[in-house]
Structures are given as structure tokens and as C-alpha cells.
Amino acid sequence: MTSTPRPTPALPDGYTAVDLPESRQPEVVDLDAWAFAAEPPPEHAAQLTQQLEWHRTRGVEAPDGSLAAMRSSYTFALPVPGGAVPTAGLTWVGVHPEHRRRGLLSAMIREHLDRSVQRGEVVSALFAAEPAIYGRFGYGTAAQGLRMTVPRGAALRDVPGSTSLTVRIERLDPERHGGPIAELHAEAGRHRPGWITRGTDGLRAQHLMDLPAWRKGGEALRVLTVLDGRRPRGYALFRRKEDWGSGAPRGTVIIRELVAKDAAAAHRMWSVLLDLDLMATVETPALAVDDPLHTLLVDPRACSPRLQDNLWLRILDLPQALVGRRYASSVDVVLDVTDSAVPANAGRWRLSAPDPGTGGAAAQVTRVEDGSVTPDLALDIRELAAAYLGGTTLGALAVAGLVSERTPGAVLRTSTAFSWPVAPVCSWVF
Figure 1: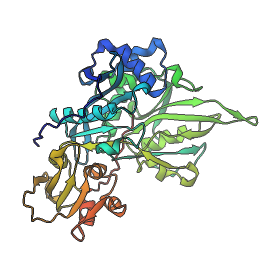
Figure 2: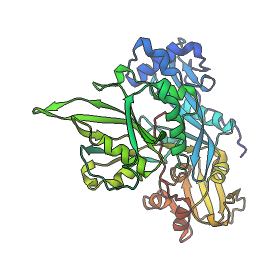
Figure 3: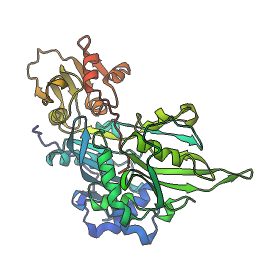
Figure 4: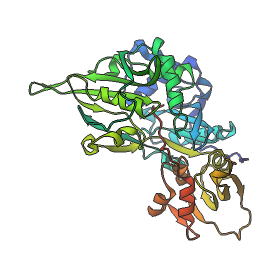
């Protein structure tokens, strides 16, 4: 897709957009503390930025030269249904409270979109600190996370092979456990849309950081590993937090991440985590909505399930994004797409995807120049992004009035094609 450069929204007088080299790391950490009201221990400040890609890190200087705002991004390959696409992972977006409401955030996000398009990145992904912010820039909620508070001793249905697996529980040692954790994480999520891997040493190290200030009264991180003989089949990063009420133990198991290669490994891990001494409840991390735990619970009502937004996506190159994924059924549809921030995406596009049983041929996406062609569906790029991973259906968006059907039956056909049998999720926040 060719894109005509579009002027980035102007910064207020006296403010200047600048590159942020690693030499400005102390200012970056200080700004992050101001933006998120979290003061890092000085001795650990350098560790907090070890994962940043400094050549992708930009800031805004105030008139006095101080750092007023910043953002960065990661180089990712985002798993999508049947493939993966180059992705810009937007991160470390922050504005000093003294400089809010002056358009700095809007200017930074628009610049991020422009630069990502120029680098050939097909989508941008993020986790939203405040969900109300990013929809206006074309980001849609593409994955939901399922969190549960499970009582100790909750019964699980049996899974063949679970009892033959062994379990090892240790204090987390990043040097020793980091490699196996990275390998298991990549392998277990290979076919799950949204399952971004931690592909650099900095990201892997940052994910295993366990600063005392982050523990909130809990113990240091533990790692539970499920083994089939000597081969690891899954792991859980967790901590226990002691509590007593009316003379009885009321502790909580807080799980940071749980990854299993198969149902038997998942069942074995949950069987252990749900039966730790002196604990009363288990707090899960954000799980996929089709995670085995919810299905295996004999009494799923007791786990207090709650959904929250997980991964947000923004389509940067519409034809490459739609060609980059596969479809659950054949479809031939004309989409009328609006996009105020990336004009090259706007207009009418014909998506033709073959039946998945024909050998996995890629879809074709072409611009419709003929103004007499009636579109089948009309939608904004935000809704297309929300449906892109198959976790949000076009049918649901149409019921909400966010997708307009121009040809009878088009919503059903297109929503079916965009669906996927594996729910999207990202297991870690970047």
C-alpha cells in the first residue's frame, strides 16, 4: 500500500519532537514515574528500561528543554489467524502532568502511526492504561482477557494423562529458568492469535523482574514446572500472599503467567495451584476466553469470572493486513472503510478469500475504483481492527450499530469468515 505523507498534528509553540537516545535514560524513568505515579527504587531504575528499543523511542521537549512526553515501540511479529504480520508494539506512552491537555499525546500517536507505516509494519498493537484514549486513533479491542478468583480446593474434571506428570516448584532464578520459559512460551502459543513472544533479551529479562516494591506484601516469585519425565510441558509464575482472618488462613495465590502445551499439563498445574496450604483463593492472570480452566471447573460459577480488554490493534496497511491472515470460510465481499488517520486505508476494498479446504491459498485484496459498485459492509478501521484476530465478531459489532450491512446476508457471511476456532490473547503486558 502506498501512502501519501500526511502532516503530523502540530505541537504547541515551544514544544519540539526529538529522538530519545539511551543517554537520556534517567529522564525517561523520571517521566514515567510522573506519568504513572509509580516511583521506582533508584537502584533498579536502569533495569526498567532494559527492554526499550532506543532507535524507536521518541519524546517531546518542553520550551525549557525538559522531557514533557514520550513514547516507544517494539518490533513484533503478531500471530494472526493462520500466519503472522509485522507489528509495531506501542509502549511507554506518557505525558508529564504539567503538560497535559495540550495535544502532545495526539501528536505522538499520529507520528507513531506515520513512522510505523513507513517501516512497513502492517498493524500496531498496545495495552491501554485507559481504554477511552485509543479508539479515537483507530485502535479496536481485538482480544479479551478472562480473569478469575478461584477458591482453594475447587474441583476439576479429570483429564487423561494429568496424573502421570510430575511437578517441580522452585524460587524463580532468571538465569536458570529464563531459557526454558521463553521456549515454552513460544511453543505453547504458536497457533493462538495475539500470542506475542518476547523476542529480545531485554524483554525476556524484564518479564522476569521481581522488584520488592512490586510484591505488595507477597513472597518473591516462584516457578512451577510440569514435567513429562525430564521434558517440561508447562510453567506458572506465581507468588503467595499471606493473610489471616478470624484465626484461619486466608492467603492468596497470585499468578503472573501460566503456560501449558496441552490440556494434561494445564490440569496438572491447576490441580497443584488450587491446593496450596494456607491459601484461600487463587487469582488468575488474563487468560484466553477459551482457556481450559474455565471448562474444567466443576463449578465455574464459584470462580467469579470477569472479562477485561486485553490486546488493542490498529490496522496500518489494510490490504497487507487482510492478506496476512487466513479465513474460516470462503468470502467475497466489498468493504467500505473509513479511516481519518491513515487515509490510504480509506475507501472500498474487495476481499476475496478461498475456501480453507482448497490448500490454504492466500486471500486477495484489491481497491474498488468503480463508484457504481455497492459495498456489502460499511465500517470504520477501528471495527475492522477489533474483528481482525477473530475474537470480536463483525456480527456483534453490527448488532451494536458499528457495522452497517448494505447487502442482505453480508454480515453473516463475513463474520463467519473472520471468525477463528482459537480465541486471541496476549499473556503479558508490554
